[in-house]
Amino acid sequence: MNQHIDSSAKIGDNVTIGINTVILEGVEIGDDCLIGHNVVIHAGSIIGKAVRIDDGVIIGKKPLSSPRSIFKVPTDLKPAVIGDFCQIGANVVIYCQCQIGARNLIADLATVRENVSLGDLNIVGRNVCIENFVKIGSRNKFETNSYITAYSEIGDYCFVAPCTATSNDNYMARDKERFEHFKGITMENGSRIGVNATILPGKTIQSDGVVAAGAVVTRDVPAKTIVVGNPAKPLRAVPETQLMENNLDK
Image: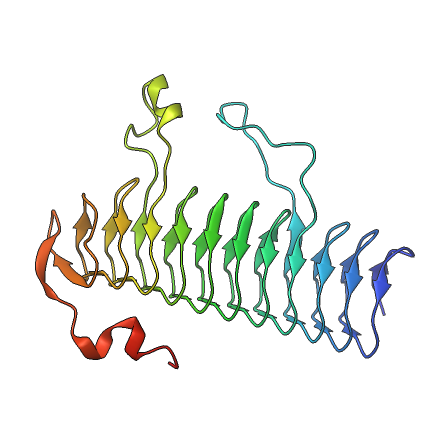
């Protein structure tokens, strides 16, 4: 079988590895993993036990840097770590210095950039992009084609609907002052964003706050409040039956 497995890699028991897969130096793979075809696992990456990695996945990729980029790639980025029982769909790219917790589902075509921490039991949907320097808790849902901008922070039990757009640069790449003000969004525990909503830089959706479909958030969203429109404004309180405290087992 056509594979490249570096002699320094540590492969656990009962691991299946597909055709044309490349496993580089210092990689550690736990027991009972299923590695698909055409997978590349970069040097030093750590894969937990019972992890499924589908075809065409790249783990531990180093970021690129254009000569015009304002942030340069550090030379000391650490390897990626994937927790136990994760499922990683086809053609997913997970960059180096990512910490992925246990039992996460990362669906086909998703991208997780460098310096991302992801807790446990999250669902990252198809073609979701999570940019660099993002902190994410546990039991969140990011649905198809949602975009989480760099320098964002997301708590637990949050929901992000398809085609959500978030941003971190109010200066739109002009004015040197922008370098001092990059800030993504903050989603506190239990907050939710509806389909095709837009969240502007630095805005906070407080605990159990809800952004309606198509809304444009230009100011912080109060806790337990539904906001609608462009610019988004409070409409009414979130129904008691939908509050996080009444849905923790969902």
